[in-house]
Image (cartoon, rainbow over all chains, first blue to last red; front, side, top):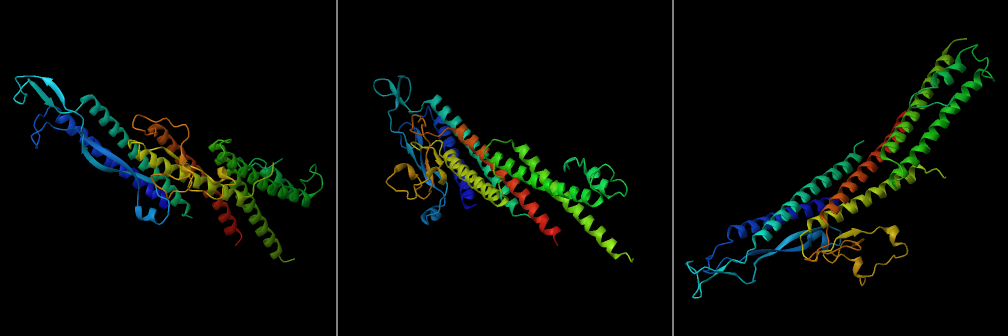
Length: 143
Length: 103
Length: 127
C-alpha cells in the first residue's frame, strides 16, 4: 500500500512537469518572432530539463522501495544560434540587413506540446487506475 | 442422481425419496440407506465443487481459465456448501423434534 | 492432478496480487518519466525468476534501478528501443500494463473475498 500511494505521487509529479512543458511550448510559440526581449536580445527558446527522481525521498533514504517520479531540474535557455532572415526594413536589422530571430521552430513546439498533453492525459488515467487498485485492496478488509 | 447445487435439480428426488414411507420400493436398500446415500452425495458434491473452484481459480491466475468461469465455479462451491449446511440443519432439528416426542 | 487446498490457493492469490502491485508501481514510474531523457523503462523481477540468486550483487547494473537504487527487484525492460532522447518508455505499452495489472488484481481480490466468505459462513453455521 505504501508503494501504491507512492505510485500515485509519481503520476502526480508527471502532471505538474508536463504542464510546465506545455507552458514553455506556449511561451516559445508566442515569442517566436520577438526580436527584443528583456535583455535587449531576441527571445531565446525555453527548454525544460527533466530528471527522474524517487518520490518520497525520505522513504527512499530508509531503504524502502518507492516509485520513480519526475521533476523539472531546470528551465534553461536554448543556446543554439538565432535564426537569421534578410529583412533590411526591420527596425532591428543589422548593418547587412539581417534580423536575428528567436531560435524557435514552431512545428517542433507544436509536437512537444501535443506530446506533453498526451503524457498528461496518460498520467491522469494512471492515477485513476492506481486509486481503483487501492480501493479493491481496502475491500478485502471489509468483512 | 447427483445433486446440482446451481439448479438444485435432483434435490427433491434424491433427498425426499428416501424419507417417504413406502416409497422406497425400487430404490433398493431401504429407508435409512437412501437417506445416507443422499447425504453422502451432498458431501461429495461439496468436495467436488470445492476442488473445481480451486482448480478454476488457479487456472484464472495463469490465464488458462476465463475469469467468468472461475467466478461461476466459486459461486457453485458456495451454493453447494450452503445447501448442504441448510439440509444438515433441517435434519438436526427434525431429529431433535422426533426425540422430543413422548412415547 | 492434485487438488489444491484452500490455504495454498489463498497464498497463491496473495502472491498474484503482490505481483500486480509491483507491475503497477513500475509502470507508473515509467509513465511519469515518458519524457525524461535517457530514462530506461523498468519492469519488476519476481523471486521465482531469480531462483538460486539469493544475493543480488550491486555490481550487476541491471539489478539496480539507477534512478532509484532502493527498489529491489526491478530491471530494465529487455530489447527496448530508445528514441532520439535515449528514452525507452512506450506510453501505450505502460498504460496497457496498468490496465492489465488492475484487472488481475481485481479478479484475485474477488476470488480471495469469495474464499474468505465461505470460511466465515462455515464458522457461523458451526455455532
